[in-house]
Image 1 (cartoon, rainbow, N blue to C red):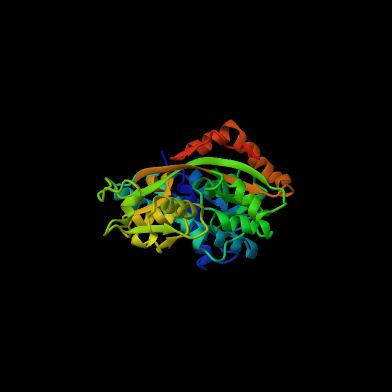
Image 2: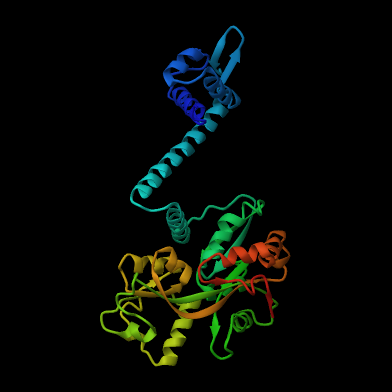
Amino acid sequence: MEDASLYQRIAEAVRSDILAGRYKPGDRLPPVRLLCARWNCTPGTVQRAYRQLAREGLLVSRAGRGTRVASEIPHARAQVEEALRRAGLVKRMETALLEALTAGYDLTEIQQAMDLAMDRWRTLSAAKPEPPGEVLRFVGSHDMVVNELAHHFFGRVIQHAGLQLSYTGSLGGLIALAEGRADLAGCHLWDAETGSYNLPFVRRVLPNQDAVVVTLAHRRQGLLVAPGNPRKIEDLADLAQPGIRFVNRQPGSGTRIWLDSALARQGIDPRQIEGYQDERLTHSDVARAVAEGEADAGLGLESAGRAFGLDFVFLLRERYDLILRPETAQNPALQALMQWLASESGKQFVASHAGYKSQETGRFQT
């Protein structure tokens, strides 16, 4: 049985010949029988390739005159160039995939690595392309589920809107919301005075203003350490031991605010911790630093650590909320998102991530 994609390869070869000028407008293409011999295929496969190129406006077939290159193909040429550009990208990805498979990685590991790499470049990119349609602005704390929602839920389930991400930390998200620079903020800010998450900070940053607070998930955070935990790091006090290298999150992030508070409660001077000023923007960046041996430990999400094959020392379970203005909460795309999160499908999606619990997913906090 012939490879079902053979006709596509034949069509691609003919496209390339046309773009390279080997076939000019009006030129007659080789008879079907010659291409059958060249590609060792049936006439139907060649005819299918020719029909595909005819639909693209590159070829014209007339009885008695054979199949010829179209006389005018400026628009079709642009389409073909785009098709070839994308085909080239697919080939590059296939090469990288084959290399990774040969090195012993499985498809799940490769997919996770690609997601993490994309996550990193979206975070670092200064010029982020806007998705088609309405663009909703997310500003706040880095989260693995938010990242997937932005690049899988929006644009697929919700096709008329996109979610543009800016990971500035929890406090930065609330400030952006207050200043009108965000439509949706994400935070996990622990308030030591009240012993609660997020609501006290919402009231402080948006005083006398209404806000809608919806829980995304409860997440496990802890110390990310190398497989097997070779440095025997079991709690925050171990970070102050000589020779232990730590990698931190940036000021204003919910993780950093919790850590500073926890160290103060335990009487640990941050200046005793080597690498405390080594700050990263996302949980993925922290996990990467530990995985690559730049640090012995970092504080981060269990899901990020597992994605890099790290061991995890549990320290706390936190609540991560999404915050909106009441008028923004009426946006159809965001309403659809909130309804989906509260559904069984949404809860299952959240709970499928390592270290995530969905018992309050979709619940409004007051």
